[in-house]
Length: 178
Length: 434
Image (cartoon, one colour):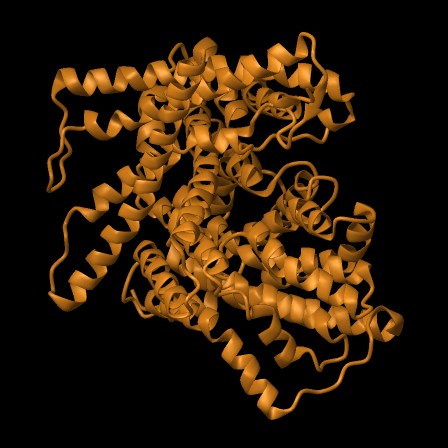
């Protein structure tokens, strides 16, 4: 169990690192492009496409991290009136429904990668890169999000079935007092 | 299509969205549920979920968002905003109302390097609340002015809301940035008038202050220099056409890093923290935008935006009355829905109507941004109210709500002023260099 946990954390950090690399690469590439245009009178020609791909990286590779940090907003104006335990049960079921639809997105994003691979789709830009490469970021990020959501649901479910609940910031996750 | 079929489709899409959002489902997930169910049952296809998640995220114009978020967080963790409050209080604290004006000016200045309302509230509030408390200012007016001042973060450029609006409506983000400049400054001035009136009517809310000498004013300007320099490099370059808003974001990040290094405040830890904060904010905002694109595609599949625009345009009402009705709708929805979700939910339906009625898209962008920022300070779901109350850490949220009310009124007056005088928002962008 411990090895599984450590492997999962290692994978989580690796994906998060990918999103951080996208932030720094985006800044660096765009800055070089501006400097290049005014100092050596040349542009990198690749910044337009790559910047979009970096944004895809930040969005999807960072999704699981944003989930762990409780950043994906919910509207709590109605659920705030529930009793704490009822609210956690409620979020548990709502999150299961949501997860099903995220899985649909994941499956569809795999379809896109498979289609691009099979048909040999390439970008029409200067680089002419195979499209499945940047498209692969979406299923990787969504896959990590699904794993993180499953982990949350597992932890919540385990505690709901017996232990005392202490609410976390997100409202859906909880920790045992013991 | 018959009117009844249209109503059924709207109820199905928007009803599902509101139902799941009200049930507490994460907002981006509610959008995807509201898109997939009607698409599967009524359009017999969910193919849009295959390509839109990638295509709408790989957006050049939206790339400005993480860059400005990173720039703001570097200013925060790299010590650029440290002297901000002190500088503002030296320069403006001599006015009647004293440091309450500094709250507004500090928020306005921080807005010029950060596109986030909550970041503005937290940055200025964390210094201002203990300081004003120590000096005997009323907590009601202190917290109210801070919550209200924070919404300047998304009106004074750079602004995340303008980036999203520009990307969703294909409007120049650079022009939107400068369209928000004058209304932002005018709103700050209006807030200061509110403070002056409040302090005049009830002098007990603020102690008497002494006017600062010239040497102190110079000291204040020195404190503000890092922030003014960074925002000047970004906004000046965009205004004079040296770089696009996206490139301006990258230049701003490097400038903020260099200035922080020169101040000796930048560490690896701060860079790492700023990158993680950027990832967190961008991912949550982008997932809402991406899933709203899927929903918009489904709505377009039913021709709902077109049908609604046709229906509203043919109502026997003058265009201004329709615009004001939308403003009222935003104010009401803003009480229960957060600002960005409110924007991405409503824009696909409202924007085509505004275009069909012949309204200027930049002018409407400023109006809608002001309206959804007002949502940040309207109870019960006003994030800025909670952010300020969280910083205060004692007392009741009701104090913040009471304190923000006069400022809320001022913000609504500002919306009226932008509607009445469109040049407030269109004059500055008209002189912008391409």
